[in-house]
Length: 191
Image (cartoon, rainbow, N blue to C red; front, side, top):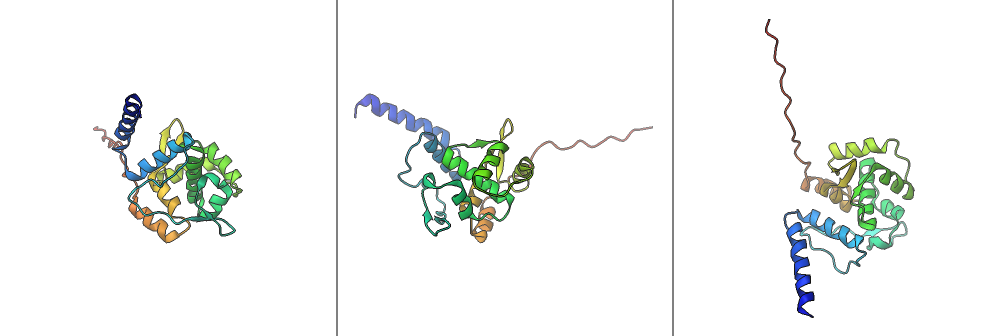
């Protein structure tokens, strides 16, 4: 290998490492998979995260859905068997992120994915998406009206269809602390 090419490889590895080193393991994994999907790279080996490997997906015929690139969205959502609309939104976002490389999504992206997955219509998907973000912590704001699947939301999808595993995933990934400005008290008027 020529030294110029080796130097370029080393620089690339150092640049990627400097960006990923401060992220949590789950986030690192999602970022690496999303970049791999964007670059259309084959996933040759699982990315080590230090967490347990999720159970293999099975389709309606009992076949294992191990490679997400060869799975259609309807088979994926059906295999996950989401219990409620919030879990379904997380499944749709997870599929869009890992299959199509869409990390930041709009509500309209989830509407189209829901239709493609042959699921029942969600009446006000933007409202459900906001509730999935604020109450359940499955999504995080990504700016300009976009949302991004959080590590908590990804852990729930990976734990599905086992609802007991979902409870464990929710405990391992607690809701983020709510911060923000404190409300100023009103001053009483002095007469």
